[in-house]
Length: 269
Image 1 (cartoon, rainbow, N blue to C red):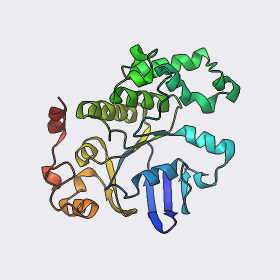
Image 2: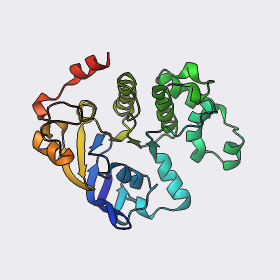
Image 3: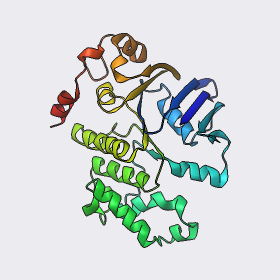
Image 4: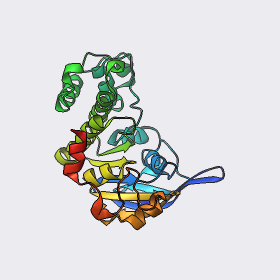
């Protein structure tokens, strides 16, 4: 159980996240939605401790994440992997090496600096690449891949950390519809087949409804919605986005009129 209590983050005179409290059970697929600047990325970065909370607490079971330092903090970041919008890959390095970077917290520093990866680590990385149909690209430079392929490499890098949670910060924001479906299918497979908790920031309400089992809506850093996707009505969408009866995808915001799975998949065909 990931438990967030009264979490806030301020930057000078701006409060990015305000008194957020959430509990996320193991194996959930949670979508965090809201307009740009609502505090979605800041929330995820605080969970991973890339941003320091101004107040409040984050606990994983009995472990107080907000108090971790040094080696303990590095171990938490191994257990709570991040997938970023901009991939954060080393373009001049090959795919396999980029994936092996996910093992940095599991091997001595001298070995990782010299790229002296064990056979076990290489087999683990190759197996994850094969799982997501990227094995044939293992020796290819990352900057020669498409955006969707790079994001799958980033997901593979997160997986070799052997995480308990994956935080995905706008993982499909820069992708076309076909690659969007590929990446979201990959995250759903990780959640369904491996039982890894996924917390994913998304702009698209249609994608959030199709893939997530729970949605958390933020407005001005505050939680204004926390329920199943079917409970997201036009009134709540208006409060989240201020777009009247239109969702950000250009569809009617009424919960019963959103495109369902078959419509989304047809759009991506």
